[in-house]
Image 1: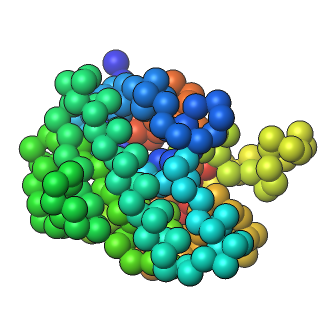
Image 2 (image 1 turned 30 degrees about the vertical axis):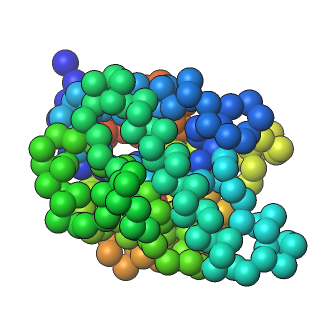
Image 3 (image 1 turned 90 degrees about the vertical axis):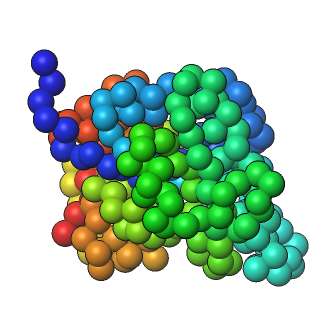
Length: 239
């Protein structure tokens, strides 16, 4: 018998690369199904789930900027990529029986609802998974910042950021075998160490509004469920 849920409403921040196959590019339907299965497992516990997903598997703005592309144009292209990812994820979830809604900060009525805060909350109250695409709808803001903003707007208890490793390390564990894993960090420690797991704007927004951030390995099959019951897993960033 498991204990009481620590978090009843979560915002899950996924990278676009989480949908990509081995090439690191494009959308792999099998990866989308894997993510959908993990979401279904926690949704069945009675947790409200909202998702913000990046677009790096379809468009990397940096490559455009390096060629002299206008920053705002590159960012708008990235927003469109996040909506494509949101639709792919919605399809995978609905095939598993999850009622899902996609809302986009960039209005495109033929494929997604416009993002309306009260409507998103109502969907969650009705047991639907809400995927929030289009970033903040503004250039110069990352999807991490969009995730922090949306988490606070919908009243999430925690922002959960997925990575390919077990949490936040002091250096890249994939290239440094001596990297140290942090169990917990304060917002100020995160900012002072210039850690790159999330950008400073997103963390500052969470700090100003006292929203905890939990960084964990989405591909650990039990990590998300265990975290929701308050077990020590991943890295918790709080005040």
